[in-house]
Length: 401
Length: 138
Image 1: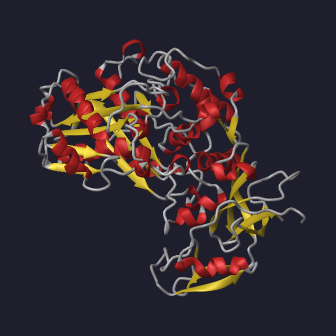
Image 2: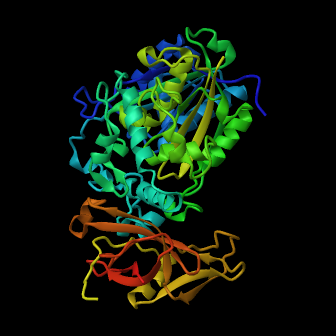
Image 3: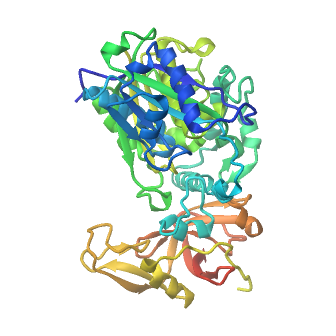
């Protein structure tokens, strides 16, 4: 497999994440335009170079999202996609953009996920219902299996689902409490050096994690992402267009995607996640292996997600994650750098944009732009995305050109 | 049992699953089984998710199950459960092999474990609209 015309990340924009946003509220379309301008400037490309666009959900449009964005930006395109993969939306956008470039459909693709609060509608009838706040990724629409068979039991949003995955895993393979706390603590050590992170200059110890309140056994507060405001965008380009960028192009040489369930109640094996299939596809397509990765940027909505992703992506056998981590240091200056930006456990989760922060950090490190947390000699990285409650996962192999 | 429990949220029931809910209201459990491939099906559907046959029949089952996973939530998972906390959410695997989301009752003094035997408990919703299938350690 593989291709001669690989799409590469040539620029990006990432807004600082903040728990309580006090700046000017803007519509998502307005944020899209700001993110596009910043990312294109970073890439050394102009709006007129753009001929492809990939979007996620938009509060201002339930349908026709790409056309709405194209018109707003004022730039016609030859390729448009709408991606709906929850936390895997960001990584899902990037491989679709790279695949479109590979196929020769287009040369420059813009992907953006706004995540700042939008203005409060003065008409209360036009605001989201209060239950939207606690439903999270759960659908309570009539006819949805979740509305009928999950919501009545209180199995809503993400915490209980991830907790039940962790319980099942620990019942079979033993407690990974220490390893889970280690993941937060070592990622927060990296976040402490990331000025864009909510937890910049705020490291925590393993004991701090273990002392934080229990939310859904066995998961504690500091093992769960904090929702925050932010936004991110990425520009991908063909090899010809990539020459205009001031940065080292970061090619997407492998990608894989796997969707299995909506609710983990119905997962074939609660201890095995979709990234097993997604990563196998991505490594095969890139013709590389887990051992060849210089850096990992793993989607981390919860600590347990990182542990299971390490196992299922092939870094250690199933059930051996805690022992594997006990001998390694995940921080930017450790022997096994994972989420050197702090991950979402350190940066915060700016809505769907949280799923772009992993591939952006991998690209930043490969480009050599990570400043005080730069890892030496980073040429190859794995970035993953996870949507819903281990419902769907995407794996990307990124390589410096 | 003297414990009287009412569930705070009613399911949004559909015509396809009406026999399942009707049976629970009478203290019985029924599941769909595929006439073509004999697979047990849950949640209810118009076709079998293994072979896509539309020939599904409702069959009475025991409601006995084993515990596949659980989480004890000291904080309510959603505002309607505020008076219901602490919640113990679980996934039960019925004898027929199908899984379902549920919550556990009568867990005080019991150590929960993978594969633990569970017995059905029929829990009406506060509005009286439906009966949920919960479980207790057998």
